[in-house]
Image (cartoon, rainbow, N blue to C red; front, side, top):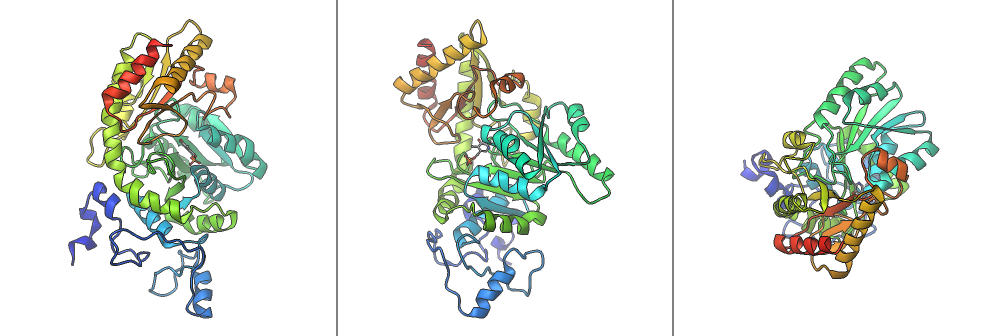
Length: 434
Ligand SMILES: *Cc1c(COP(=O)(O)O)cnc(C)c1O
């Protein structure tokens, strides 16, 4: 047997570059890099082969015959660039399957709409990315699916909120934007207990948004989650050129999710799939490791600055979730991996004053800084700063934000690949101006 036939011997860092070398989706055995598969439709050898393609589509549970090579029909159903990216994402998160979508929101709405039906309830941690909150609060109820916010760090409160109708527990860890952590293994324990009680086969599932941590800082499926979702637009894409989303996890939902994507039509474009496959995923570990080295220095700088009230960064021993971070955030070699995201609040004599000072700081950066850019999104090669309260999380009513730990003055910082001292110098200058 060739050594490359047994991928279990190789490390995640290598798998992210080479993927499954014996992929049935790989039609390009002499290419070092997969070509951009720019073909919206595919040539069929015969009417029978076309018909067979439609029979086999989304019928992976009952495959006919031994030939598992896909019959490509039409880009919305599947094509080589997306399929190979999906194989590599499966490896990245140690899942059974992965399916990509046009955006992170398309992936999140996809998994929630396939797991739940009218009459079901979704319990979510109350602080979430703003559009996810809006999806749960404004759109799911129109489908007859109720969403309820709970504090997932309080396991008793979480246990008490589960009813026989609860279908999904949904959260981010670290939470966008506050960086709070939720104990994934503990939530898995609650789900195990609940499912033992359920006799009707209607199981409870855990969906974790792993966009902040990425698979090279945290592996939720290994910790007991059923599904992971990603905005590929962020850390995995890394360069900020393309949007994308993915659901990774258990196989049983794969066919239904494929049918959902076919009919709702929120398919990732071949070109975006190609950039995530060729640039994003292979460079992910290297980028995040470097950003992490800078993030700890920036977090320490901010924490020691007299104008800063507090800093939430999972790598700071003063961070309230530090012990949990050490337990569940690990790089592929098993070392502590607190990631590249920071949340902080400036000092002020009222919440409004802190917000004003933060605004001044960000405006000063927007006008003067070279290495820190005022922009939403995250996980980019450039360092990005933004104000969640009025930007990424503005869909959450202001009272709700404050009630659950999002201060009006909270600032989110995503560390890029610039030289650490330059980022710190730009931040320092802006603090002097605020
Ligand atoms: C940005 C983001 C999303 C949404 O992803 P898009 O690709 O912008 O649709 C979902 N979850 C988190 C945590 C995000 O930061």
